[in-house]
Amino acid sequence: QQQQQQQQQQQQQQQHFHASAREVASHKAASHAVLSRETGTAAADTTTTTTTLDATGLTLNAAGDLVTFITSVVTYGFGALVLVFIFGYLRTSYPIMYAHNSILGLVAFTPDETFWGWVPASMEYKLEEAIESIGLDNAMMIEYFNMMTKIFLTIAVPMFCIIGPMNCAFGGNMAGDDHLSYFSFGNVEFGSWMYWVNSFVSWGVVLVVTSNLYGGQRKFLVHRYAWLRKQAEKRANTIMVDHIPEHMRSDAQLAEFFEKIIPGD
Image (cartoon, rainbow, N blue to C red; front, side):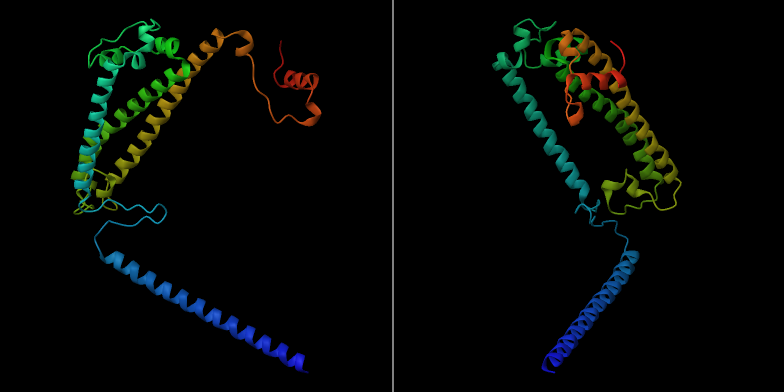
């Protein structure tokens, strides 16, 4: 009887605990719903466009950010200019570090030994000569930078000179006091005809990026195949195979497998 009484008491305590937990959860849910409604009402009444992005912890543009942006541009621009002058000084002071291939005669041209001598040498850069002197990977890194510059200019110039002024003039001044967003989509009010313009611009950006990427890949393959053909036969035709199943871990079985998927001599 005592054990039964203890079990009944324990069951009553557990039921009371679960009931209390449900009440607390219900109270929290109700409070959260009320807070959400109040927040939504406040957000609907206010005209500010500054919102905290929960996923990243970042914030949207707000009033006063234009000054911060201009300050950042000036600061980083000055820093970049300082690095250019440091490079120009070091290049002329330590030529063996910065013009070693030129000293050895491994390149077709020799930059002038002046402070700005590297500028015309860079403008006369030819991809084929770079591949021969510094290797395919290094030359492709330079070509990748050139492609990114081309994509940036193709997108940024029309964006800043055409779409930006259109957003500013015809967007409806949705940005308010946020001057940094005047040239951006953040200045376009809901339902404006500029939505159609920006939608076509978005697809234009996609086409510019993808066309340049595919074009760069085709260009890379041409030079890649040419580079492989110049290598020794064994090196140019050697691959590494891993994760081979146990029943195929022999020269005969592996050769038979490749003969089935890639028949030929």
